[in-house]
Image (cartoon, rainbow, N blue to C red; front, side):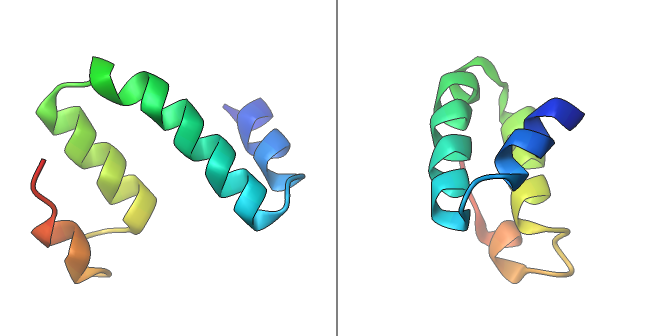
Length: 58
């Protein structure tokens, strides 16, 4: 995991976001609903921090 974070940290922000999105697209279909929700929470923050997470319906 640290290796992935180090690679992303070296990229420009837009480039890093695009790379993370491409990687997520490959993994997302393999996750169940609960794992998808947890993934989105990890990306956006805890529900108390960001109300958008609580409104996401998969």
